[in-house]
Image: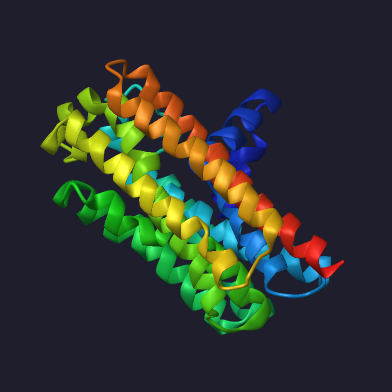
Length: 304
């Protein structure tokens, strides 16, 4: 560590900024930000009033560090595959900006720090759930599931669906049924979200022998699965209202957003243009963000 500090101090300002940016990109910041938004919503929905912002910040920091660690481990393991795919060949490891050893040490340090923060300042349950999510994504999905089955996204999606539960448990120190419902929404949303991207990048996945659904079962079958999962998502998205977790504001929002998502997937099914797959993928990101925003708005308007 001392040697690393000495070397870092000898770098120019530009070199330092480039190095810091490389470590930043290693953490998949956009993915982590989305996970933190979902975790934050879980926190706010878990209580009737906004608690200490200091506590929320500490809890989110612990979750963020563990999530970033999982992302970094994923990039270390997939560095050779990333180098041959257009979508990922500009990541720090394929570009040679970082070594696998340095990236691995970095991932371990931030992961351990995040877990320690959660253990000392939040609660043990949240730490355990966060570590389980890290292991599920960084190791079980990346090392095994991704190359073992075309259902990799479905099975591995559970780890990516955990953030609302992590946020909720950080407040209540319990595994609440309402929190599991939020997990279910993300879990069902994940397959159509990633399969749309997989259609757009199917040739690259095929080149690397990664058994994504469009590669193993064809594009038409994948499009059908996307539509079917979106129909299931439509139903699941209404459950917060059905179980009285939310009110009419959320219900109307869910109906509109889910109808738009379903329209996008049906349009994709009948389209021969792979660009429509990317449009569906991009809309799915807006969808999950707005669904959680609607939950939050509905929650606080009801309380007021």
